[in-house]
Image (tube, rainbow, N blue to C red; front, side, top):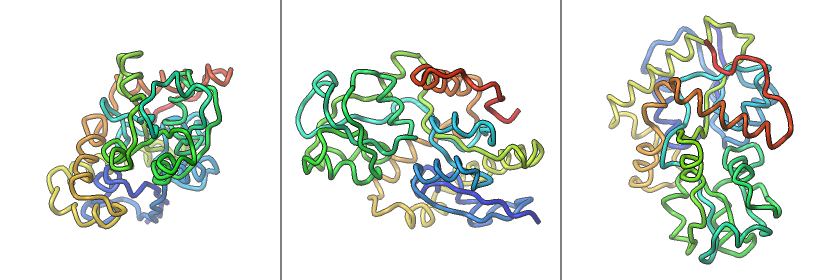
Length: 276
């Protein structure tokens, strides 16, 4: 049986989706060597072609399209779940035009959205996502772009919302926001890519029917999140687009990547973005 390397984050939405695969609750036509890591690390590993299957930031797809297809199952996309810009005091985004803003990595969708929105012209400082709120609270940076559970916990650090980048995207495009996707190596072939997508969908469906059974695996990797925040995280980031991005999801992904190409003055790649 072929062994495939699989990378995803310890965030509850990812562990919810992949739990049945990780714990062998469903039959797989391949074995798995699993890496759990922060998404920025996964972005970099995928950019090196080091993983067969990987969760990536949606924005990172541009840099790996020559080696990877995107799958329509297992990603993170939706409405009302985008990154927030926060600061230590009430402010508008125009007040932060020249500020130093921490982001969860240069390759993340959060950082890309800040650039697409366009108001900020100051310095961006990449940090691991869980270090951003403490850094803003301590005054080490003027503001930060927060992701994951940060949208529910930033007030505990005495921080203030400046801009909901997800809401801004939805108002500008009338599309859901693509945050992350599952990428699979093209050289594995279409048959195996299709099998991976099918098993991710089956794994997610298993967790949707067995939420209580999935809980220990999710909680074990949840980095000291409270049960309430874990549930909020899953409810926000696991949705119909997780099962199938569909035509609207594909359109949203292409729109985001076209905006990134426009920022960088580069043509949109010619390869098919999704496994067909």
